[in-house]
Image: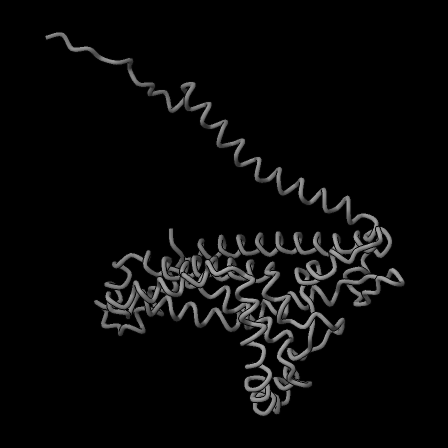
Length: 323
């Protein structure tokens, strides 16, 4: 019986027309992302050029923000962004990584998935919901209970006490950091959990065969193998905290241009400053200054993400990193 065969497949290393078209399509898709980012930077720079030209580098080093006399400096916005983001990382990273280790290494199967689902559900809650909860619930708790306690305990220590000087008002940098920590916790936890679960069982079995305990197995085999992924999870959470707007705007105070070591000081982040000031920018130089803050926020976010990628790359090339 005669057999019918289709055209012979192209075995020349993927050089047929279909492969070339697909290669060109995905290349254009990748380049379009870079082009979009470049266009965004250029458009922001064009609108911010007047403020940057008038104030120069002092725009980044001064804290005077006076639309009446047309004097603008964004140093306190930058400081507030960094302060709240760092507070969020300090609070969220140990809790989220610890939760990820518990779910991946210790939790029984019947408990693992429900707990992970509930925590990951926090990631889809809109920012404005977090903001309302922070305004009506978290801020009073911080004002009446948490901040007085911190002032009476850690506030009495020689160096650490500088972080808790001033009146406890509940709407300040500390509360902004706490709300950010709650928001980035499910993101870091979800990624960290998958990273820990992806560690090959041979890593654990090798340590156990040498007589290691569970804790020694985690610290000696699991965490070193997963460190690049864990760093990536932390930096992704940091990137979200860096650009969060509405929730922070509602609890950070938005009333001070003072750079202070105290976390009990009301302040601004760059994102909250843009949200508050944009609709009030009735002068061209005022509008340009607000856009300049947006440009700084975008550039700093790009730099932070680039450094995060570099750090992950360097850690993954280490002797204990994944191959």
